Image (cartoon, one colour):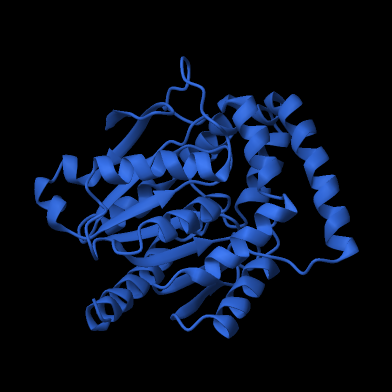
Length: 296
């Protein structure tokens, strides 16, 4: 548990190598969070993976224990990528062939940019529940209304601390039952995140130009990519991740795989940690072998 003075914030992060110095020699996994949530929800997955990998989680600007007071961070994809990039370099994770990057929801967009910034270090990328959609009048209308709901939900977000709205909030995020501890964490993170940051992130995540750039950049990742999706996701339609997978599979020469969890929702790392960890390990092991065989 440490703080790093970046140019944007006093960044809170956790590195499994702090409690196990031998972990500094392991291949690292950097986890990038989704919208309006701290890094705490990764803990069950980190506990499962840390025997084999050096696991790093962090709180993005506007969430969790990271301090932005006295700083003026920009709440954009590039700004969040700069922030994570400084952490990568602070920890020395930019060494060749030493890094897996995992991005969840909005964090998939930041993870994609990191993959392009650190191609030599990158062994694999994983994008969880962060897809693309066909550009139609219907999807345009849906994004318009979603933008309005972001403003509305942030203005009245404290109501989600109370039943029955708390249960509705959790059921939308996780289809399968998750521990009460993490239900409380999700509510606490959402209601206490920085309002300006949360609105900005919500808006750019559905901006059409941002989504077009995201699509192009996913196709440009040269390392193996795993697209992971809970097919019972009520937060982000799972079809978008399937479309992302199919597009990358058709247009990129780099390995691309899909992990579909039929009965899980937006938080597979909490809903079925063991099964989700198993898919990640399989992807990591394949990617490490692929990296060894690739021309340096």
